[in-house]
Length: 461
Image (cartoon, one colour):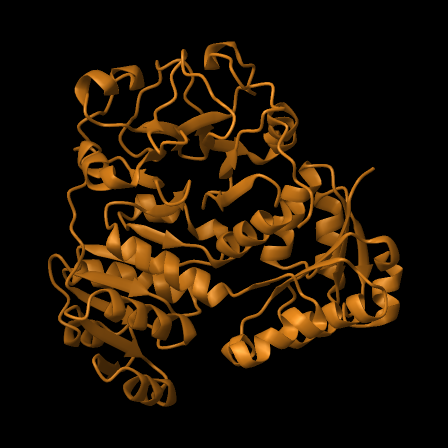
């Protein structure tokens, strides 16, 4: 029997979750107060749509809340999300609820405990915290445009742009072992323009302009980046554009990790700039437009420095990143909400990208797929996910050489972590044992097949 899910909100996050879960065979109903959003999502996916406010009991009832297993509240309004979960639990007894909360006032432990205990929410997702952490990870790993940790942080996924000076261009991937015998790295996916290439057999080569997703031991991040032509170091001066919740959170986290780092904040809104000055006494606050070359000049960006574009406007973030590069910044990280802008970064020679909708969707999908799934990370091009899971005794892959396992052709293994925490780069004769943690790239359309093959239990909570 299909598990029934109600998704409140048909925005970017709601649509992303709908795409993933509909491909996995869930029975999905989407609620939104925008008729165009409902029409669009029901045309794209095999789901039911209900027009109305998700906080209204009659709307939830029309959506089938009576026999729903899980409600995911991701509308643009915290208040509607909270009310929808409260009604679902108190009136209809919905067993599992995941909620997105943006306002930090609700996230104060004094009040978030109310959501967890009294309302009965199972998990609160805070986009601002998720996004800030992702930005800080990219500041710490300037050679990568995407970073995520797996297998109890023993394995790191890196998204790496391969430029004309990449040492391994035109080299068959099977030869990486010969070129770097001390390096344990596996290329899981290659994005070439708008095309996804999943390496099979080791004959694939990397070309200039490719965006590569790879898995390596966390202890070998710098060595791995160097092998792919990236020798950047963490900047000791950081300029952040945008003193909103994310910009403030990023500054606080960088200062906590590295108090000696020189921090500058650019903010066009005078009230926000004044608030930032009160909050961040260790930072230099410049009140002005980050698209004004004079303001960028005043920030004194130079070689070896990082510029973080964290405003709520994608176009401003892209253009100000370009200005910062022209002014001398070596590394940029930009907040991008609309996926249509992401491919621009490679062609514009910009570096890091952080997608709030992707991060929020990844966190929610990880909660939905509890069971043996340890971590989920949707790659920013939206071609698929990198996941990690514990191999079960019941799985058909246990005890067999990988060459004898019939994984879907568009799926690739990145790393296997044994009980002694040794990290194995998967090869044809590698054998997975019960209890191993496996890191894998899976396109959205193949997730259901992978679940069945691996006997991964995706029961709710």
